[in-house]
Length: 245
Image (cartoon, rainbow, N blue to C red; front, side):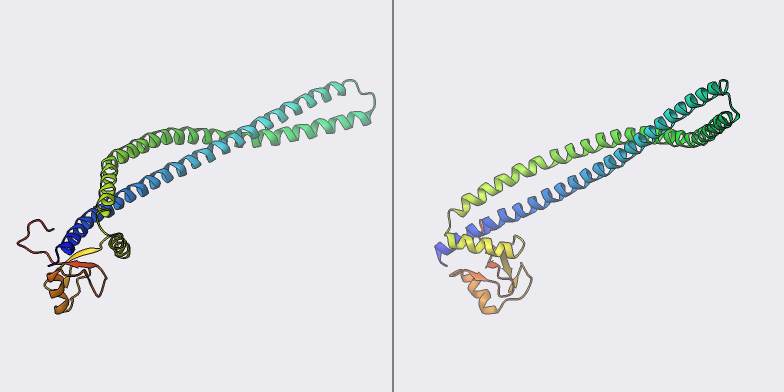
């Protein structure tokens, strides 16, 4: 067995342990981040619905105010027309004013009927907005608490991830750059698993058999051997060597 190569293999196995933890932690953190995004989208959707109801209420309120103002304006016109009726001197003027008063009354009646419907709609919207605003505040508080809990839950994982990344960088400096490049390339190809044990002629990465002669070469550890199927770097774990993982 080549002592220098054995050292490299030991380092690669150690790197693999760290790489596996990095992949695991990144997966956990990514899952949490997606959950936070999902929660954020939930509150945004609810907030948009509340805003839409508020805008509808504002429009209906303005519509009711405009209608009330128009009714008041028509009332003023009717009063003025009635005052003029007492002062007209010809039948023609009298008939014109009567028609004007009648038209204004018809318009007023129509507006008042419509205003009743608008006021009912406004009242319903006011209730709905009040309920949704209360519900939104409750949901907002709940979601804020959930996000805080997620942040607390991941704070330890983030700290641990940074530690592993530092270890990975430090250990990576102790081996040949070409070997580190090879490790990184294989890891990227295989979802973070670049170095695997071989047992009974089976690669523990892809669980495919390797040729018997290749298995012997892995045990001898005179050169770095890759799995013919998945390209992962293979190593043989000597059960008598308690320091090898």
